[in-house]
Length: 306
Image (cartoon, rainbow, N blue to C red; front, side, top):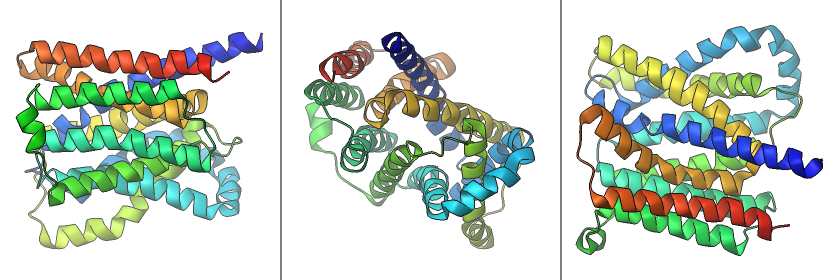
């Protein structure tokens, strides 16, 4: 009976991780489209503030009870809000000003799962079985094939810019968040936990938001920007983080973060659907390779870890 429940948890975790990555895959397209309308820190601030407002009706009534939990573990909530909310996407939005889309996708997608798996092994004592490592390597190969379009010359010409370093910092920040979520207080529901993290993360952004307003061009409020913030606040924040956090609890950090490798694959499909971009054979092959890596890392890893 316990085995059956465990298998249900695994299936649910995989489903939720997939939902999160599908929604997250639109994050970069949206943020890039409004980069001329709003500064990166301002975009992050309004995103997380709106997400906090969405969750407030569900969490505010019991916030007094949660406050006792927060006071008991202030450092935990500070670092979780800082890494997962204040820093992660803000760094990615900043990077968009000085690096290419290929570099951002390559560095962010391949480095964060590796960082998170290593941190989970060191601090959570999660096992890194051979099949999980093999699956992760296969995913990385698929991503490299997708981003290089099968050209070795493009990979050889790859170099780090200032923007690349911002993406790398964001990936490491999100890796820390993925490990911290595994230590979420059990007495807090997922929605209440997200509200606290989003709310504190938005507050931590306020000084930097005000500073950006003092020197950046005025924000251009229009339908495109408002709809983008709505999507980022509700979709990529509330829905995706809720699904992702539950998946982390069901699958563990090491197995869940590997699903992040699907984001460029889903981004390609969304580009075809929304922007009518052409799909090539490389897109199909790389997507199948990433999916194969996920299957090996998750299905076979569960068998060999027993």
